Amino acid sequence: MNKIKITGNRNLLGKILPTLLIILSYLFLYLPIFILILFSFNESSVSIHWTGFSLKWYLNLFNSPEIGRALMVSLFVAFSSTILSLFLSTSLVLAGRWWKNSFFNNIFYVNIILPDIILAICILSIFSFLKIPLGYTSLIVGHTIIGLGFAVPIIRSRFVEIDPFLTEASLDLGAGYMQTFIKIVLPLLKPSLIAAALLVFTLSLDDFLIAFFCSSPTVQTLSVYVYSMIKTWIDPTINAVSTLLLVISSLLVLLVCSFKVVDRVISNE
Amino acid sequence: MGVLKKIFREDLPFVFAAPALIWQIFFVYLPLFVLFLQSLDFRFSNYSGLLNNLFFNVIANSFILAFITATICLFVAYPVAYFLSMKVKRFKNFLLFSLILPSWTSFIVQVYAWIFLLQKNGPFNIILYKLGIISKSTHLLNNYFAIILGMVYCYLPFMILPIYTVLEKMDKRLIEVSADLGANKIQTFKKVILPLSSTGIMAGFLLVFIPAFGEFAIPDLLGGGKKIFWGSLIVDKFLMTREWGSGAAFAFIGILILLIFFTFFYFIYRFLIKFIRTKKLWGGYE
Image (tube, rainbow over all chains, first blue to last red; front, side, top):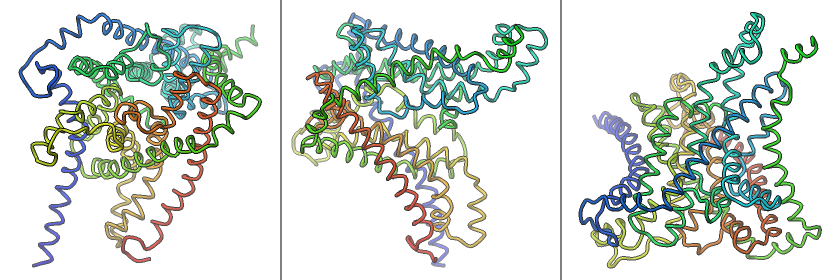
């Protein structure tokens, strides 16, 4: 009798504990963000107390030319570095098809493994060594470096799966190299290209450290601008900017996950 | 022409790989080399200058912070990943996706969320006040606890993901086999599940430890810059005081310590897994 009761309890515990743990981890991860979003609609500026619903912080946000400029810089840099890393890694992967060892692909793992701060000082030092002023170029270079670290393995993993007879058949049937590339290789690579593009774009938008080193006072990404806002004065405008950033990156991540990019990254690690 | 075609057909010319390789070498390996030369400064004075207490403390601070963060993340993430892969039946992918979603949104926003929560007169303060734990509003920011909280918050998903992947890929029949052969749940865990998930733990530890070691923004914003860490000192050397030589030397010492740590960690870790598997630890025979 007693024994049955114990096992019954244990089963109950075994059922409740996982659910409880998962709910707690969700609370831990989401509650801060929800409170942040909630208070971006708060009317009061100094106090944390809820005084009423208002959109004035968003108006504030859209009226501020600096924030608009920072957002444009962020988007432009993310877009350019995505295009660049896709171009560079695709051409690298195409050339590396028959390489026996993957040395040339492995040299890009450094970009993932090294702490971001090291990559940041690398880019800073090469730009100051060449006396190129910091700005768009340095930001794009930095984010492309990060992007290559992820794009090369993702695209390569798809490329090695392509049956070599397909391209050979295409060439035998009279298609040129360009035609083969556009009609055979590119469509087969498409899922990995989309996945890599979305990932690089998201990483570029989220990045703070490299942007912090590579920004100039006039050309700042939104992350760096938010950082300087936090450093100087905290008011609900930051909540509004944060909500904006959250919405943009959440939408992107939704896209990323719909293309199963996460599986690809993991399977490569 | 025939030769050219042969080359083309068997392999695209090396020219195609060149842009990416040049980019990588020019912007990563070359600066690393230049910085290394700069750090040597032909005198080693940059390195000998670092051999005092302050710099040792800074490295130790970062190391301890990264270690605590990675360990807490491991102990929180393992059960979550375990239950997610073993017990949850429906909406598995959705649950996993929503767990990692916050960490993929803007990093600085995540840090700000905690600043907002913990600030003076912030939501946490009010809750604690209402509960009667504190008598008046106090600063919950700018202390070690806030740093750890922020670090764990930002890096937790990076620990969950690899462990979950390994557990998910594991052949679940092995657990049944282990039970059929008479092992109880604890024995099954330490002899089957834990050794098989050890690559995931290792990967997660690496994924958390390395960025946590080089972290700058979280100690700076949540810790108020009271304690100096490896990352913050590099920022200081490179952006504020512009002592690049010693900054670079300091950066390389950090990398060296990371390398040494992970070499040691690998062996200790393998020993530990073997120890748990074979030795009489949490009950059970053998």
